[in-house]
Image (cartoon, rainbow, N blue to C red; front, side):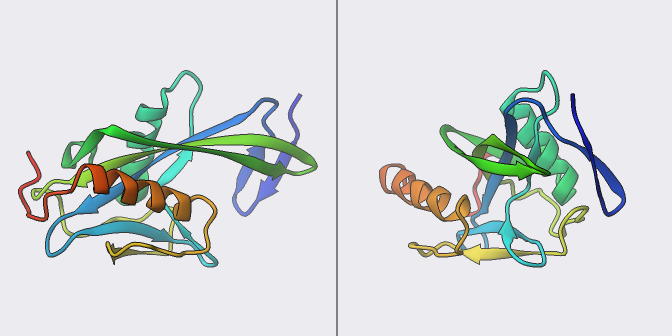
Length: 164
C-alpha cells in the first residue's frame, strides 16, 4: 500500500520498497577540464532521478540526463571503467527507506550543443576540475573523490578530442 504525498503540482507515491536512482557526472575538456553541476535553490545536484520499473541503472541515468539537461545521450560518451554507487536513508512522509544511487562518468562530445535546456533545476555551472572539491553534499563530495582516484589511475585527455 502506498500513501499519496502532495508536493507542488505533483502527487508523489511513497514507495513500498527500496528506492533506486541513477545519474551522470559529465565532463567536458574544452575550454578546460570541467564537470557539470545542476543548481537547486538550496544545494548542488547532478542530473539524476528515480529508476522506472524494469529500467536498468544505465538506461535510467541516460534518460534522466536527457530530460534534465536537454542534451541527447548521443552527445555524451560513458566511461565504461567507472561507476559510483552510494546508499543512504531517505524519508518519504513517515517512512524511512534505503535509497541507492548509481552515477556514471561521461564525456561531452565536441558536437554537443553549447546550451542546456533545464527542466528541473534553476541553473547549472561548469566547474573547473581542481580536486579536492568540497560542496558539502553527501553524494557529490565522495563521488568527486572517487573520480579523482580514477583520474589518477586513468588520466583524462585534456583536449577537445573526445571520440565521436
